[in-house]
Length: 425
Image (tube, rainbow, N blue to C red; front, side, top):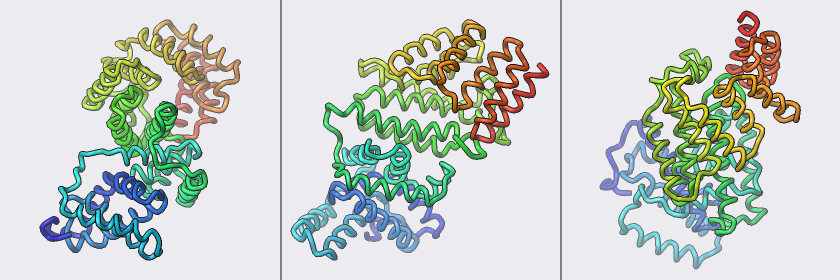
C-alpha cells in the first residue's frame, strides 16, 4: 500500500479503533473471499486473522488505508499464497492466483457497497444443520459478525474457553462432514434459509432478554443480529421471511431505550415512556414489512410476529392498542408455527381483548398439557391473570414459582416484587 492510498498516520488508539471498525464491517467479505479461493474454511479464517494482526501492526505507523476492506482482503490473499508456497503444493494454482492478484492491483478499488454471493455462502456455511445451535451462533458471530471470542463469551456469559471449544469443534465438524462452501440448491433453500434466520433471531433474543446474568438487555448483541439480518435480507430480496425478520427486530429494538430504567431495572411495556421509543427504527420496521408484502408470497411466522410488534409500536398506550387484531394475528401464527409460547402469548392478548377469565382457562389448559413446565413464563402470566381477578394469594404463589425458575437476576427481582404486591393489592 502506498502513501497515495492512505491517510496520515493516526495515533495508536485511533488506528486500533479504525481496525476494529473495518474488521467488523469487512471480515465476512474477507473470510468469504478466501474460502472461495482456498476451499478451506479454517485456512481462510486463519489468513484473515493474520491480515487483522498485520493491520494492527501497520496502520498506526503507515496510516489507515482509504479502503480498509480491500487492504485486508489483499493482505489475506498474499498470506494465503505465501502459505501455499511454504507448503510446496498447488504450485500451479498459486501462480495463477498470484497473476490475478497482480492484475487486480490495477483494477478499480473494491466497492464496499457491493455484496456478492461469497458472503451468503459464508452465512449458510456457518449456520449449517450439521452444527449444534450453540455452535452455529458462535461461528456466525465469529466469522460473519467479526466478534472476538472474548466478545462472544461476554455476550452469552460463558467462559472464553467454552466459546473457543465450540468454534474449534464447529470447524472440525464442517470439515469432517465435507460441507461445501456453497448456497444450497433451490429445493432445499427454504429449510436452510430458515436455519440462518433462526440463528439470527436466537442471537437477537439473547440481546433483547438475556437468559442469564445481571443485565436484562444486551443491546450490542441485538444490534449485531439486526445488522446481519439486514445483510441477509439484501442478499435474498425475494424472500419475505428475511424482510419479516428484519421488521420484527426493528420493531422490537425500537423499545430498547425505554425497556430498562437508569439503574437497569426492567420497565414493563405498560409503564414505558413511549416518547423514548426509537421512531426511526419503527419506520424502518414498517418499510421492511412492506418489502415482505411486496414479494406477494404472504406473511410467514416472522412477518406475523412483526405485524404484532407493529400493533404495539404504533399505539399511543396499552389501552389504545388494537388487541383484537393481535388476537387474530396470534391465531394465524398458531396455525403456521404452532407452539406453546404462541398459545401463551395469544392468551395474554385475549386477556386484554376479552378479559382475564377466558385467558386463564387457556393458560390452565396449557399447564395441564405439561407444556412450558421448565420456564418462568407460564407461572408469570398465570400470576398476572390471577392478580387481575383479585385472587392475590394464588397470584403470589405463581409469581414466586416464576421467580424461582427465572435465570435473569433483573427479571427475577421484578417477579418477586409482583409477588409482594399481589398480597397487598
